[in-house]
Picture 1 (cartoon, one colour):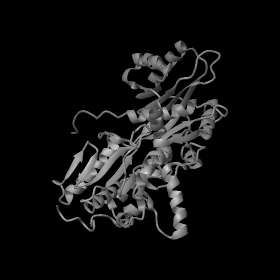
Picture 2: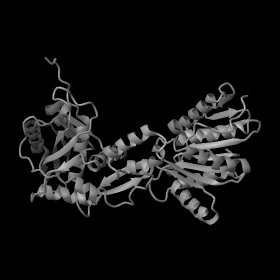
Picture 3: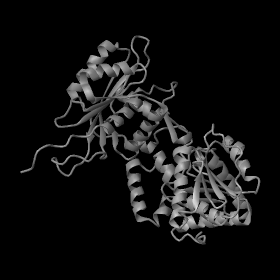
Picture 4: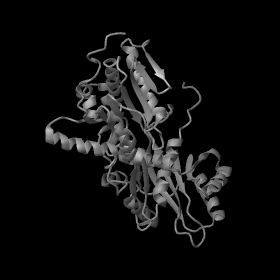
Length: 457
């Protein structure tokens, strides 16, 4: 076999600092527990693979294990397995290691075992002699870690390292990080490492430019940018929109009563109930889509950032659907709506089907699930935080007042696996306008202008 590498020259300084601390703990049998936060795409997985490579090649003649787990086996654990193989290949071990049982990489007698940390995964019985790694630790259950994984390190007091990014208080990564910081203050041994996007960008100009673009696209307080790049926790619950977001959404233009020539409009439609007992409203929110193009003859590129100007609200409470649907169709045609994202959950499905009969592909049915609503919440926050979503100037109308009441009352729950729920507490207000606004953003994302056909003289 090729001689083991003593140093990994390709690693950046912040990666090398972590590698040195971890390998020292492994080599000297210190059994330390480390927590590592590195900004997204900052080289966390690469670092992990090189730590594993070091451990394998320095223990190649001993039957010792490294255990690495991730929230899912496929794709997360398998991505890590393939990355380790690439590292081994790059330093000349391509013909020396073998993959056993589809989830173990063995070099000589030393092995890295890749496992799922899913709550239902059966992993008991594995032993981590050298190293125990927890990837995306913020998404791994504390109970699962304490019950099934932590005991794996007991036989030889193995070093433990948890990788991840912040999310909410009280998750596994946050708990270990807090403990590590306490221990650091007590004995001076560094156990927690944190390198945000600005630190990563010091060594990679392309990365810095990309993340600056993400900050412009999402807004600095967007949950994704805040947690993945700034390495800060999401809010502790409460308001969905910060005061800054609400200010950015406040437009200085009047509400429009009719469609303007050459303007492009999309809409979001949230269905309420019908009949005298209905308490929630059906809300149709109309937005003008604005986006800059270098020339009227050049179509906007797909996925171009769109400015959404909310120009009109329509709301109906308790109106029978047999009367309501023709009204919506009439409004859609009068405004020339290019896309209508409509709630197709439950009773909304047949209503959307009826609308599609008259309006065709312009109607985009949206079924609300935990995943789809989370995505819509992120999209709505991105548009608001980046200043790409504005509402007409406040007026005395019922629609305007109810809309702003819902936006100001909107709450957010940040759940495990970076899932987001947004809503209005029933005791404070409905969420018809809020959901309709999220559907407007969805409608804009589904609309792409057609390219002009012909030639320029």
